[in-house]
Amino acid sequence: MIRLRPLLKLCILLIAFSIPAATAWWYYQDQQGEDQNWLKEQVTRGNIEISVAGTGTLEPSNYVDVGAQVSGQIEKLYVKEGDEVKQGQLLAEIDATVFEIDVNRSQASLENQKAQLAQLEAQLTLSNTRIERDRRLHNRGAVSDDALQSAETDIVILKARIAAIEAQIKASKAALDGDIATLSYSRIYAPIDGTVTSIKVRVGQTLNANQSAPTLMTISNLKQMTLRAAVSEADIHKLSEEMPVRFSTLGNPNSYFHSTVNTILPTPLVNNDVVLYQVLVDVDNRTGKLMDGMSTQVFFIEAAANDVLMAPLASIAKRPHSAVAFVPGPKGERQTVAVKTGIQNRTHIELISGLREGDDVIAGKSNRAHQGSASSLTNNRPRMGGPRGI
Image (cartoon, rainbow, N blue to C red):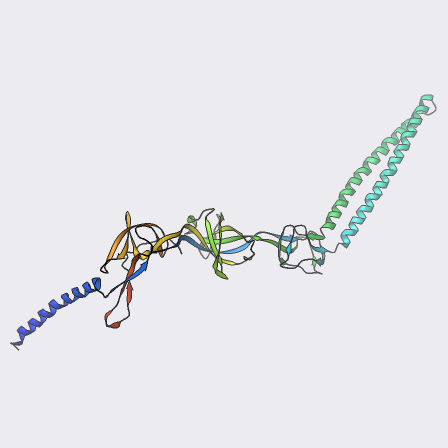
């Protein structure tokens, strides 16, 4: 036991010195040797943008609920849902029997008053002739003063009756015009060019317009749509009028439409303590691909650069007054190159100078564990934030 102690001490010392040496050797090989596999990517050319995301719904920019101003039974419908109509086109007819009777009654009353007026005017003409004769006879003493005054009074009365009947004729004309207008309301015409998007009545249905105007159908101009988007209160300050907009529909997410912001509504919508603001975007739909009620994914573009050099965001490190890119050296080591950067999104950053298209950059490293274990990726890039984007 006593002779083994020097040997034991020697073993302990060898182990104590070999562990740090082995660790140092492994670290050096890990950093410099062939076991080091950098995660390399190339500088490419493409498009990059910064955007604010939101959701929205499409609706017609202009639509009219076509109503009825008179009560009655729907007699005819000349259109169906989906029909294209022009302004002034006849859409429907309401039974006009009662309205036609009112027009005929007003017309007859007016004709009767006109006949009375003609009779009174004839009497006035005759009375004027007689008064002239009575005045001549009065000058000769053949007609008394009382008879002459009575004849003159009759003329005044006739003129008053004529004035009264003329006023009645004006009132009757107004009543007739009103009855004719009411009769015209039994024929429903299209107020705008557009598409019949809904019909809410059927032939034979009775309408009651005494309390409120019933809606017969809705006509929408689907050639011009409005995108009503919802944006969170955290992002709404980034938006402005005339800002570029890109959106796609739920049914066709890979096909994009482009427009600009028209209006940002100041009043928010609050749902379960979530504050959202509405943004209106006018959309040209002459192709007819967009329909009322479609759901959309919307991107409000803050900045964009097309056909520019770009690199993975992980391969760039930003410093207070500069930026560097990580690139592989001639012996496989990682080196840095000063670069000038532009806009960035969540995955890529624009390169203005410092590198060329096709150059390799290091976006991280893949450390292959010994004994054939699976590789794991580690990112050597210092943590840095970036604006929202896609």
